[in-house]
Image (cartoon, rainbow, N blue to C red; front, side):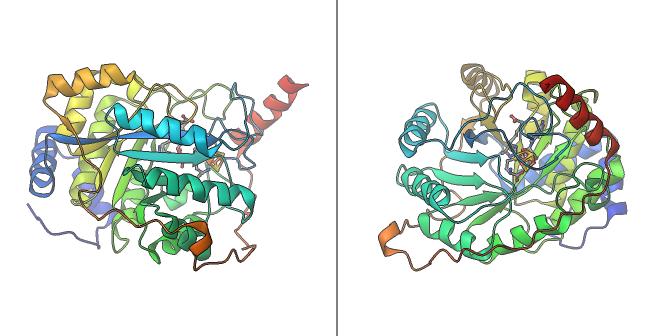
Length: 366
Ligand code: SAM
Ligand code: DTB
Ligand code: SF4
């Protein structure tokens, strides 16, 4: 068992790990986990959808894409006071991290971004880790978030570079890597992972792990989501991910990225306690808590706390790996909004199932 962090994993090596006999895979992953983390500590993180729905992108999994017909009701950017109240509630129920999500393609300089910066300052002052997921980001925008006290930026690769083209046509895989690079130029940590259960192969899952694990440094946080197949999206008929696939994916992620925080993310409503316990044993050390993820259901927080008690797990305190960032007030900022308009790509190739879902949505809306 290697205890060093490698940045040269190959797809073949990762596939071989994923396909190991389960007992060997679990033993190896759990052994690596214990060298790098406290196996009885799991971070509880709370998601806040600060801007829901109406997104211009065509991500085939996403209920917030405007072009599909889902039950998600769009709303305007949340107020700073609502965000503060929600963060305080999350803190009192054991969360040490808040992740704010916006259904944006990319960040635009202006009053809405200024409001997000104020949300970041507010939550950091509550001594919680603040994460944002706002779409593509320039280096200047990343610097401004860092200055406000952002701890992490979430930007998922979602799948392999090859399969990405079957999921999204309004942006390219390269754009995702570019945003991660922009975040890396600051002291904000990187959170990047993906989704399983979108019809991808094991090769694609391994391809995504190659892309993540060969980043140097590796992401500090890697969320593994099971697709939540939402009616109206192009993936509404995908069959649910088997728990064994989730366990294998978590264990493989743990082995190739020993130091990272592996997040057992979307899809927990379908998982038994026993299934989740195996994921924790295999190296998952974070969950999203609260009765909603961004727009879809999540287990009740009291049920999660009962599960923690049953398993003898403790919620993780904030800032155990890195110091809390300082918050610079808006009036003392060193960085001006540059108003840049980067040319993020628009491949616009045809994805048949996305086009079909879009056409169906248009019919329903008529
Ligand atoms: N708009 C921003 C972006 O795409 O980067 C941030 C919000 S987006 C909803 C954040 C992540 O949620 C996506 O990258 C994807 O991995 C995950 N996600 C979205 N819909 C999902 C679904 N139905 N099932 C599982 N994960 C999902
Ligand atoms: C991540 O990888 N999963 C979270 C968080 N990062 C932002 C989001 C899951 C969203 C699931 C679908 C929804 O609730 O809309
Ligand atoms: Fe928009 Fe993000 Fe959903 Fe894609 S995943 S449609 S970018 S909110």
